[in-house]
Image 1: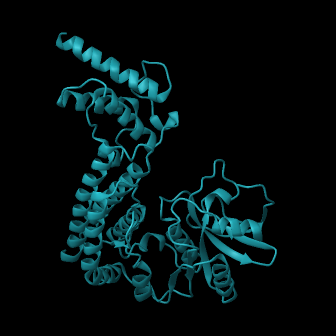
Image 2: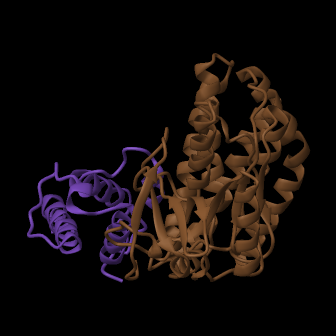
Image 3: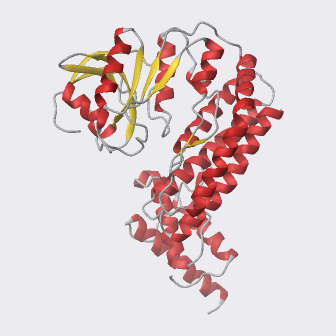
Length: 303
Length: 93
């Protein structure tokens, strides 16, 4: 982190701490916020949808449809927002905070305090307060402390370029709620209902992505798909613990899918990723993995 | 070269690659845990690629995605030996 004054100004109860897998730290935060609102155990229930989106280029996105399913199932409004400039993002953050809406923001880890070896990589923290001189936030990966940094430092955190920041000035606004606590069986129905509407589009997106990867020599980025399968595995483990039939097998299946997606991500960021054998290898592994992934989703729909 | 000599030579070459990659003197104990040596999964991937460079054979690196696989020096040694026994080891590429 760059040299700046950092103060601890409070703390927040955290049900979930530690290092979550890549591309899942925002889910850990949503779980923490819901626990603090009296809805514990929701981090394990947030993987309510998964799939693929592709907008061209090396990044394969997950479906990011879980907020819509969560809203239908529990009544909570999670809004994912991106902005084209820092000023617009800051204005939105101020509006959300003034309305009492919880705000999770993407920042560059390099500028976060208390990291021994910070890297320029994207991370999500909870924004607690934003004044004219200071900004207060919590980094659950480090501690439950609310820390204060000066606004210029916060602007650097929010805007500096870093690995994994592919959507600019992203934030998650967590509105009031939930108002419903659906049963495990009801959650599973919500999941299936959403997959039925999104599966075809998702399949099309990943098919196009594979065509792109077959011709690409650049790096690829699939960690968001890995994160969605990680959360789906947690969901199925929860559903299994609630005795929803077949979900024990699905939990294992999605855990394996998540591991395989993370492996391709790791292979893609390795310093020797561009070597011909590794480019060939990642394409082959990706083709096999996508087939397994689509088959697993089809199993959820047809079970 | 007889079969046992051939195997000994291959084992020596595997050990040399492991020792060089891990920046330690050979021989390395089988039960050395890679994480305790500061080697993360990217590091294991690098070691497997170094073995590929040495033998000109593709290692089953996708097995890194299996939970609990390739945790120790012994695991790496076993995977290298198994792969090399499945196909002839070439010379260094």
